[in-house]
Amino acid sequence: MITEKATVIAYQDGVVTVECQANQGCGGCSAKASCGTAALTELTGKSTRYQFTFPCSRPMKIGEMVEIGLPEQSLLRLAFIAYTIPLTVLILSVLLGNYWFNQEWQNILFTLITTTLAFLGVKLINQHLKNQKKYQPILIERIL
Image 1 (cartoon, rainbow, N blue to C red):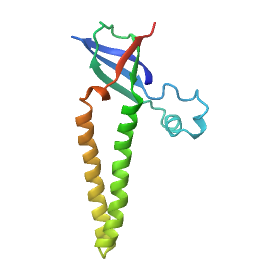
Image 2: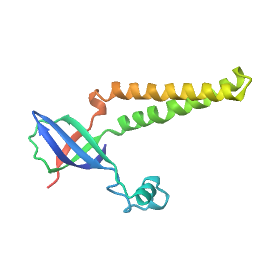
Image 3: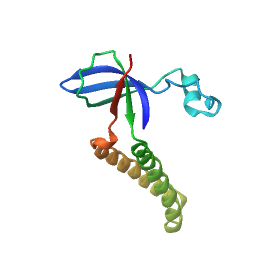
Image 4: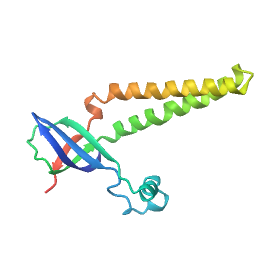
């Protein structure tokens, strides 16, 4: 289970909305020197915040700290979809375009169109999967 600390920002009728800060642990681990997220955070000075909404049977107070979790299998599957599909389509479209078209601009256009369609497909898959229970975070515990 992948866990993260979050702050409750809304609770109504058994549905809680929490917010996590992406760079919460940046700077404290041994991989900081080779971490792209830490480098971007230092460069831009911005931290990304993510919000999650999910059902919760316990009443929650705004501002309360909680720990949420997502099963590793779900996270790995989502990462596989997000990275592998567009990359595979990009490589295959370059190879097929090189074989099918004589002029380079046609190959570039074909690759651009197919890769864009791949990203749109990943977005549609994401919209479908985000409503499934196994891809939603769960409340693990309150942090006192």
